[in-house]
Image (spheres, rainbow, N blue to C red):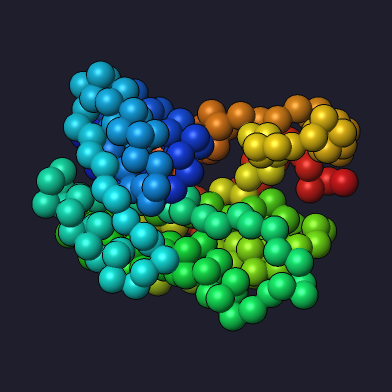
Length: 245
């Protein structure tokens, strides 16, 4: 799919999502940015997109709530048309020790990381089919793609991101041949806030390419999965080879 003149709905990922939105805007794609609390970041990204002579809008939503997906997709359709492209990046990444886990911790991760991708895809797919075709890109995680949880304290997150891969595979079959559905599994892309120098050194040492990838690498992968006409049901690791260790 050539994204020029198309409409992309992008959820979550203020920093990485901004890179995806701006790269699509450079290709002439109109963008809708969904945020929960990062209004200033979303508005800034929309402003930069408009400077590239495309339309851009922002929508505040809590995608952990069931009704929000249909509202968001409807708002995008009313203002921009489409959507032709859905990039689901909304995610909760919160360390919680096993002794502190409860139903709320599980539901929060399932509702946002997995549930929002599921509900947005179901809401957007009929509109994509009406317009002829579509692309759905979800964000998994390199750990889930490798089948190894590896780090303690992230059980609900790991379960939800593993579910994202299953969702993509199932949707790819259900929505073929009109809509292509794939996932990206990021590795060390951006250093988390408060990350220690020792932890950063350890990550670089365990990554064959020896560095953090940066948000453009996710945008590059997303553009490939939007451009392609013959890849569906895949999960591409963008992790600098981190999974090899």
